[in-house]
Image (tube, rainbow over all chains, first blue to last red; front, side, top):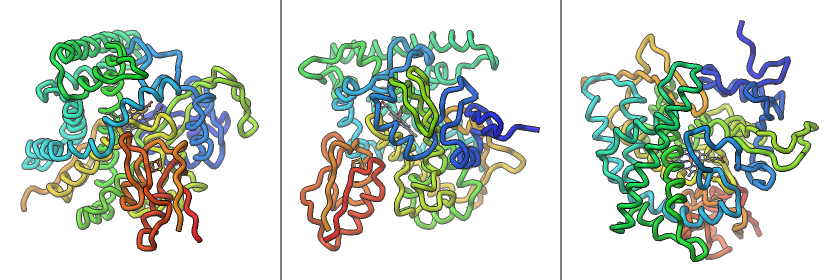
Amino acid sequence: MTVENPNPETGEINLVDREFAAAPQPVYRRVLSRCPIARSSFGAGPVLSRYEDVIWALRHPEIFSSEMEVQMALGTERPMIPQQIDPPAQTRYRKILDPRFSRRRMAELIPQLRSQANALIDRFIDAGECEFDGAFAIPLPCTAFLSLMGLPQKDLDLFLELKNGIIRPQVDPGDVEGATRVRSTSGKRIYAYFEAVIDERAAQPRDDMIGYLLGAEIDGNKLSHTEILDICFLLLLAGLDTVTSTLGCNIAYLAANPEHRRRLVADPTLIPGAVEELLRWETPVTCVPRVIKQDLTLHDVAIKKGEVVTLLLGASNLDESEFVDPERIDFERKRNRHIAFGAGAHRCLGSHLARMELEVALEEWHRRIPEYRIKPGETPRYSPGIREVQYLPLVWNTQR
Amino acid sequence: MKVLVDSALCVGHGRCYVLGPEVFREDERGRCWIDSHQVPRELEDQARLGEANCPENAIRLETQ
Ligand code: HEM
Ligand code: SF4
């Protein structure tokens, strides 16, 4: 018999198994009602789940720091800017970056993204089926990223290979050394790729992201090439899988819930609301880590300086003390303060880009393929960590 | 109705100026600003939507 998650005896919550990744909501419900501070079965650190606690932690980086010891884990050689540094240093970078990622600027990318979405759909629509992750959810954010950065679309395959080398190294399960090796090689290749672009732009200025970063100043000082590299590295890691996962979670949900899907098809003006509600319900980035800077006591539990805590965003987004009727999916929810993009100083830099990508994708997909379902006899497969639906076979009718 | 935005709390989620574009505006960095604290009656719904969807709780409404 499988043990209930979180384990009722030990209070341990397992955030890394596939069952949790496929359906985290029942686990959130249990952890919210039973243990405001659970323990992670992986590393045993405290896990905060209530909306009030999590948002408080996100707003107090002086206690809940993002400056982790283990920076090498993802193939990086230095802390990633701005995710792994705290204010006030982080704020100075955000002042430069925020204007480049504003909603207004992201809106300029819409026409291009719309045609890229359609070009992808053209490839498989007549077949009446596709594996959604590989055919759509992975390539779309990648083309959006290349447009954002002003990089050539022909680098698409190279980019996919490099980011997979970091996020999902193809090694036997359990081969930790092998994974570290692949990560570090891919990391070096990513650094080398961006280094070449930076040198090119330094020699021949251009009005694209890297050109902009080369010209940007903090208190009168230009960013160093190393800082620009670190920013690019993070953008690549943060901007692809997150959107891929959200697209997969959304389409899997809509495939399994035709009554909700048909509402979107009948009235596409509901799509922005649906994007928000599904971000809340699915919370594809289930949690974020922080390291504690000073001893504190929360809900009678002592948390020690140096401990790594997990802030369970997904659970917070189902907390009934913040959300009316949290189990109900309502695309017209009036009050929705979900934190699927985090909150406080580290609020997702790409949230406006991500929302734009999700809205365009849902609009174009449902305009072209309004009726679809999960291939009979098949089950979608979700990855732990960021909830990518790595296997999502869909079918639809091709007769008009 | 009066609307107040605490700029120390605002981090630019942008929910307010998307849902209530005639009450809330977007600055260069994607944060919210307002050109008048006074909300005309016909825009009160926009002000309410902005307040209800700001994850930072940065917006306050006062009804006279
Ligand atoms: C639906 C898609 C996305 C989700 C759910 C998501 C989620 C998040 C979350 C939860 C954080 C906060 C991390 C923390 O507090 O430690 C974050 C930060 C960040 N995200 Fe996203 N993200 C998405 C898309 C993107 C995209 C498209 C980009 C860029 C192209 C991006 C770039 C970043 C960056 C740079 C940070 C770090 C910000 C900082 O530390 O100041 N994200 N994201
Ligand atoms: S929703 Fe809140 S945090 Fe976001 S821009 Fe508006 S006031 Fe600022």
